[in-house]
Image 1: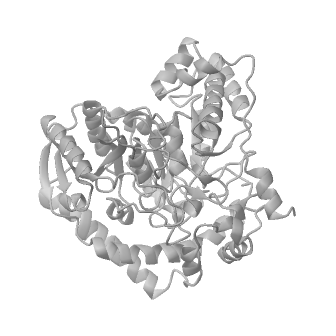
Image 2: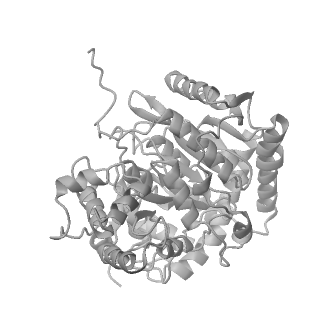
Image 3: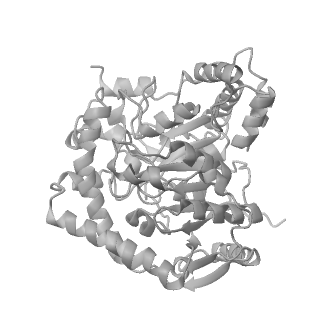
Length: 533
């Protein structure tokens, strides 16, 4: 086997297909897909103005111009060398038989912990998995291919989905380096779905799929002025996704609009025999794109979780208060809720559950989906990182991996107690209790703090967020752009009970349409310079 260091050097530079004679000029390419919605792209293909191949090439051009050059966002870790050929085949199919549906010919990016059976790798950003070529697609990738989507490439992430170190920097991986926020290049893109968020904010694809264990979709969506949906655990299969926690892991959409996020959720959700948690998905799922309702705020009872305003930047709090006033003007009934109970307990139990489940699920993934990798077990990963410490761990360590390796099996009393206590605290005694007591449709709060300065030496300084209750419960969480503070995005979150995605999407869409906070990034180096004019 090739030496891992040489293999790493050979496999981390994304291949970008050359511009073809059939593709439009770069100036047009950079403009045609900027902020384009799925509906916009479908209209262009239906009218014959653009083909899927041309759209795919235009996104490749933007990746080269913005991600690899220019501001160098570093969000795409690898592109799919078969994407143009796949798009051409879908163009022929459209001409012969018509489109399969709304995702036909639409380029999509996947987080680099979602397995694909193609010429790309699946590494979770770790050089320990360079060389891993999955023998089959993850369920999510299969659903997208069946829907006619073009898998454009893989996105960078916080290595191992931010489950490596107690002092990590979001958006950094040993394979991909640091992803940068397009709204201020010196600020964090948050994580762990950092690359998915940044790529969509910069219009490097139509939509992207991220994954979320606790905040990994909604937090980077908030930091990058996007819509992010963390679905109910069981709505989207985890089969073929590098695992952390079987109790909390889920894939979900990241998009510039609620409408696009709903269409992507329609495409990737469904029952999968390989993931037992999805047994109810077939009965519970609906066509989420049909629930977009501009009037959904009228009469909606929303619980404003006031504890989530404590410690927030006062400028951000003022911006969120404007959002609340707008919802009230749209007919929402706002009910102040002091807090969602059991916050401190959730944190303690959650980490215990994550460590046990990582220990007991990662080895199975590696055996099934990473036969070409130089590591076969979690213990191997830890040893590999120590062996190549200068490359794998130049900034921070692997404390979480080591702690997980020390745990026992899933029959351990410590694990069972933490899992059951966490679920009870987050569901019956947490979110569901508050919703029932106040007869609420959803809870609303700031998603998290403003994007913080990136600092690979000190690590993250995020200040926390409104993510853990829904994550531990396995409940849905939708974030939408909530405003800006001196050019920095802040998100607004809507959280509900299990399987309430349709209602949350309707409410989020109504707010989005009234607020219109989506803004094209301009890639400033910083927002810290003061201009008296």
